[in-house]
Image 1 (cartoon, one colour):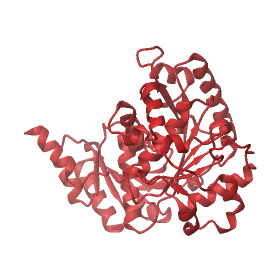
Image 2 (cartoon, helix red, strand yellow):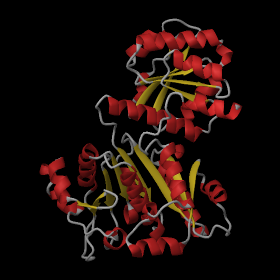
Image 3 (spheres, one colour):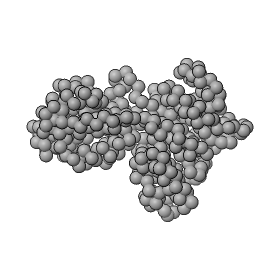
Image 4 (cartoon, rainbow, N blue to C red):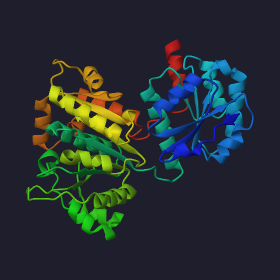
Length: 407
């Protein structure tokens, strides 16, 4: 078993995963599916010495190809050897979910989970990230803070709605998770009408108090939604008094501080979206959502913005297009918009302007009002990113699902 040792590419990666497989197409597929979060280190089970390489590279977890093309005995032996050598690491098998024998053999050999090799990339990614974060929680170590950044070429009101709904969904889904919304709206923050929260600390005040920003201070000074548990930190208060955008180095320091205190930070860049390109392009755990709607001008602006992001060093795959479909029966559709913008990944947010405006005026985001196509799309996206609470299936659930199909 041999593993490549190009450690230089692992800078800024969240997890390093050894993948024991001789299937080049599957290796490349996993690399692409997990590129934003994991470095995949391929290991060929037909060669010896791989276990030593895993240890030298300090892998965070191991995936084993349980496919028949390597021979069932070879795959089983590989899993048993890996489990014996690394009893504390997450071990995930990937193979044919229709084979009950393969699933049983994998769990008997020590696998913690089993993934279907035919599952969509988003499902594979979500399963891996959930398993890794569940492992980190069991070890008593907080996973790296995630930073969801909403970029608005416009901006439009629905872009702010997206940031607010993502943040409240993440906070309300798991009460133990610390979630902060950093709201850079101008000239006034919409937090009071949109969430029913009166801001008590602003970005400028937080920067002035940077020397004393520990968790005890933030927990007492930041305003928090009672219903969702979301913490909020706006640039401007509700009065609309003139506020200057902070120096980028000061804002970067503030972002570093809150990243150490929170599990997720959702940043609404609003009118300062282009400054986002200079604020930590190499930050670990960063996610970029680029907003647009069905207007041709919005599609054009999103395309130009994505071009700027890629020119500035962002990978196109790491930028997710958030297409607001406020008129679902109106062309262009979400897929056509994504194609025109040049986005490799997109989410289709189907709702109406009336629903968004009503939720805003009620002070209760759609994410707190029950199921809808809009919230379902957000949940699917967050699950694919592994950002919802640990959703990794129980070890025997895939076998039970197969038995249900067979009965």
